[in-house]
Length: 262
Ligand code: MG
Ligand code: MG
Image (cartoon, rainbow, N blue to C red; front, top):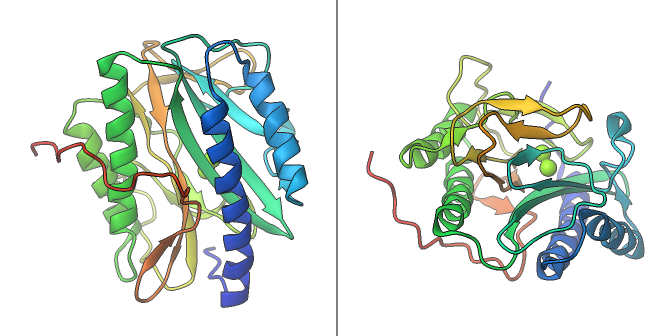
């Protein structure tokens, strides 16, 4: 069941999202060679608490962190810990906040120092595919229009697209209907309506589509262990426009990536 949000509810979700954008922006500037993923998690817990929020991932189905920190071949759901980040790594930082009963969800993939041109390009294209998905998220369109926009950008580059995990409704809880795949599948394809709030989150691999789950039962990695990237925004869909609720003030919206040849 898709929960259409009232204006009051969206105001609460927006507040939660703005706090999350601040925390992610801070974490982005904190990433540097030598820091551990556990350090990032500690900073996130402190910053979320100081803003009156609660880390929504912590304890969710038993997850032990405030952040999912997924390094290099890790796609999503990496557990923060002793892993030290090295020059040339990339780390996906995924975070959710519950504030006053309202939920936000957003992720960025951050280069540690300088990354190889291949990896830099992967990050740019993944971020660009998220923007294309957001552009397609308009009243009257359908979930498949969002999925198709993301898929088109990614597949044009020959990258792998993660299929078992996808975007979702969010706001009154962390994961709600509808599911928003990053490819056009045969699942439900509801029309997008005024008052829907969704998290859109392409996960893109430098190599093939396949993924595995590690023995910690959380960390999702690429099957061929190539690098993966993940970007996510929570967006609210209104009659006249779509608002990116988790937009960071420093974020460059228009990508320099040219549209891939179709
Ligand atoms: Mg997330
Ligand atoms: Mg999500």
